[in-house]
Length: 206
Image 1 (tube, helix red, strand yellow):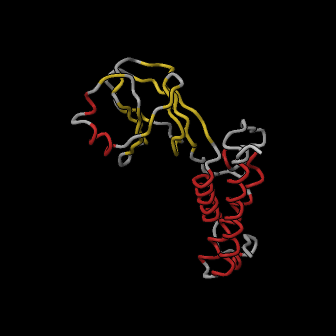
Image 2 (cartoon, rainbow, N blue to C red):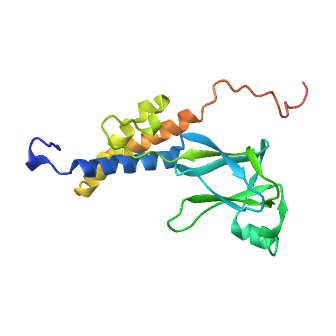
Image 3 (tube, rainbow, N blue to C red):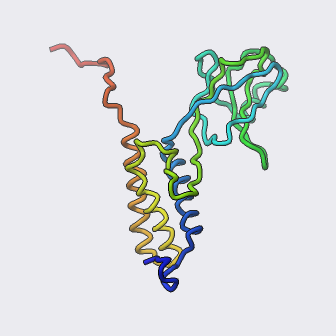
């Protein structure tokens, strides 16, 4: 019911529809976290914080020499020492922060004592690149996510109907969208080749 061929039926501009689709993509990514990447951080002696990639959304794991670091916060660090930025050593923890108008940053504790060029790796969830051209492919062009492209149509349709005051139709489309989110979450969590060893109590001997 939205056609550019007849302006009397054109309820939304192409720009508005594109905005809704990109909003849906960001929402989907934030719920499912399906697109990940890694980034090598070059540590510098006495430098606490480092700028993260522009597509950073969420940290999954940070390692130094393949050893995972614990995630911490300003509050926790403030309670643990009077001046935690002055301690110099190999970092054992990290925190993520952002300041107004600036990219996300990662900080380390203790503050790095030595320069490090290759051993510190951040594994993170990527923020989606906004779609702009007809040839753009959602979800960073990941082929295994092609089956979930229709989720963006459901999201845009649901919000569109909501804008028009049709809560009944909005509910239907947003439920279809939620179903796609749940399906992707379930499928990405499957481990068909995982075969753990037998553990636990087998009960009393017969």
